[in-house]
Length: 250
Image (cartoon, rainbow, N blue to C red):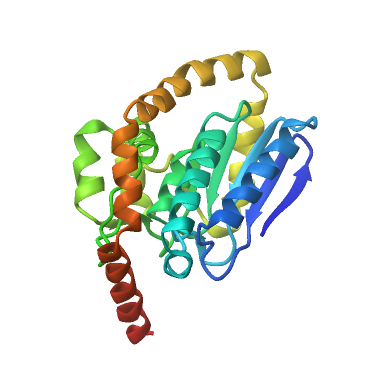
């Protein structure tokens, strides 16, 4: 599900979960476990990547339909905890975006400290699918942290998917690499970041990022509204219609 390979001072985590690395409770739980493992050993930095043509295509919509409201609420809680863990992880985390990073997959990438995206046909963003659901506050605050405010409405409301070069211009990724160089380039960046004095890096990162998490946590009423929206029958009807439409095109 998430394979770990330690290469010198850097630990590589590879998402291998279904065809598109869809986010569910199992994947998020395992990511948290892997981060705990890494923090307990002498590894200086992390590279997070995916498998095949996708880094992560976002939430597993089929599991949401199968699990209903109880699963949705558990899923959103686990996603919030794990994304917070990743975003505030005390060591450098570099995303090697080997393929598509869609919706929640884009948030997962943005929670890392640095993003290298593969050149080619991969896309990143928040697409205008048939399912247009509100994002939890943490995802929105992380996006604000990464992207220029003047482009935020375009990213969130426009529903566009961006090429690697477009994404670099928007601030969603830091650089673009050829496929054969992607993992090596991400490893090099991780090693460079790891060369910083660990205490200095940890304190600077926590000072910068804990404020983002605090902003996201302030409005509990809004988060409850997000959970209700994802659990509502009309939301699940929209998800079902979207999945059926996608299936008819396959």
